Picture: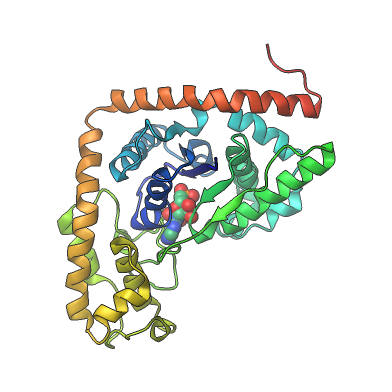
Length: 334
Ligand code: AQP
């Protein structure tokens, strides 16, 4: 059976891009005949500064988000990265396999490190090596992600290939990125050229998964658009990033293709389309934020779910780490 792995950083402000590009896809995969592991990647989050008490809160909130969105902790293995130590242990071995130049070429590193890359944490540079370990410590075959993670997944394949080659084994699989659906790259509501992001200073740029119906409606009403009516086919959106973004969001939320949506709304003005989008978004998202808030009343339950998840995960990761030690020539722990 295919084994699916993916993760999200508990860095606060879980948003509609994370939902449509990642979380909602995870729920689709869970319903197929696969084994799935979903992860809060707290060790990735600390590659940039995180206030300790916010981090703990954000990790629990993200776990609530997974469950509220439809991840069933019985069907899927739901874990927090730092609680399954084999991720970090394999990452160290991968740090010794991967080359510095590979890491320095990553666009996410360049974006996040900014002009003064010498001042970025070493962890931010090594981020893709830990991500490769997250995936390969399960021998995962499929990784559903948004488009921004494509380059990191190619690097994961490079690391697996080099490890297998250097040690003369056929041990780590070449993982398939799964980037599908109408919303693999949700853009900011204020600027159609920037991706919707947790760290955007403008709260109006994103719909947070914790936003209530009123906040969702207000942000969509204020979203940037152009003055033209909607086209009747996808080609007509090519030079209209804001319009395309709203149509993509509608299509993904309503589980339709962009062409199906445009067949219904082509010719309408935004004054008519936006209220339709508000109704749809509120219907799909408000119940998730309500459920997240309810789950957050019971942090002990969340911690129990994560403890149980890590026990199940370690039944997979401990033997794979042991075999890796064996291949590399390390003496396995007792
Ligand atoms: N805008 C997006 N559209 C579609 N998918 C997205 N993802 C993130 N943003 C979008 C997908 O969500 C998953 C988890 O992402 P992450 O936790 O690695 O967060 P990120 O990419 O760092 O998120 P942000 O919001 O962009 O944070 P900052 O502001 O720190 O850069 C991944 O599958 C990702 O593709």
